[in-house]
Image 1: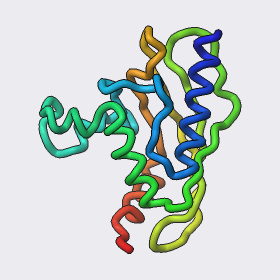
Image 2 (image 1 turned 180 degrees about the vertical axis):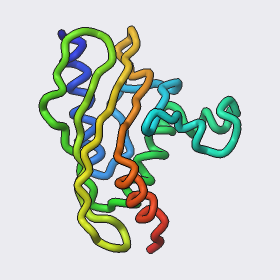
Image 3 (image 1 turned 120 degrees about the horizontal axis):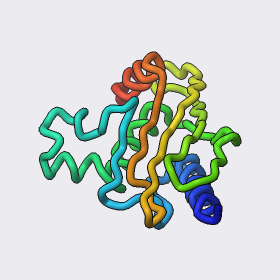
Length: 152
């Protein structure tokens, strides 16, 4: 249970950092091998090069992978805020399920966005997140991609 409390505290810190538009990460939350997925697809597979390419792994995994994704989201939703839905406390050391909500306004159109998201985390023996899979509705993703293309 103490491990869960520690993970919850780190996740709360991560949300607070995101909401301050920081690309920082709480110490001990992820390591350089942590994998990120979007709707089940690893970031490595989205970069248009072989997933085992060292450059792809360097960009898609660990802190760089997190920052790569967050920077794109911050560009699409400049005033974006994430909140954790409070029903995510679970006992045990297996995968963690998080219910999140993204709100803000899309770049370019200024349209409001309210996007529920679901994240599944796998946590290793050290307490570090080894895999994070964010599930987002494809219609929301399409709106985010369009807003991400808008240049100032």
